[in-house]
Amino acid sequence: MKRIGIIKITVLAVLSLVFAISCNKTNEKTGYLRVKMTDAPGDFDSVFVDIQQVQVHISNNVGNSGWVDLNTNAGVYNLLELQNDITTVLADTNVLPVGDLQQMRLILGSNNSVVIDSLTYPLELTSQTNTGLKLNINTTISPNDLVEVLIDFDAAASIVETGQGKYILKPVIKVESINYL
Image 1 (spheres, rainbow, N blue to C red):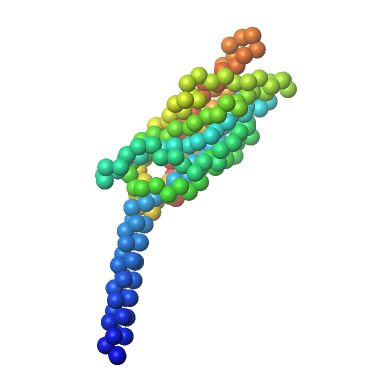
Image 2: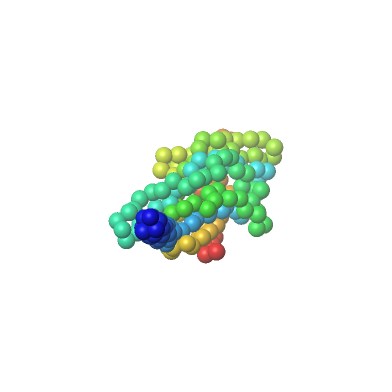
């Protein structure tokens, strides 16, 4: 009778050890990514940009590569509220496999506008609605890293007046910083 009890305890201990090791290996193969956005000043009342999705392109040594959708805080953002060190979180603490992040892509919606002298004008897009806005980020996520990428969406440089009261959004975006927290 005691022998069966010892066998059960031994089996449970071995299973617990296997489970702990497998969980530990999983943690070693993932890191975390947060994406934040800020803006340089612009001479407008407001600039509204419709961000629908944030994606990153990742590749690693186990043959996985491609675009990954991040858990995005989709919405219309007033870029002019994101000045003087004020930021907003576009994608927060996404779990990603370790590897190299080459690019980031912002997928824009169609609800973009600029307000000038209290008048609202739609911002027309070109191919951004189909392909998104790509940024080179060239960084690496190592095991258990929390990588925070801050992008600067330059409203002043991104809006082009075409005449006849029309405005085009030609986004000028740069990676402001990449921090390992």
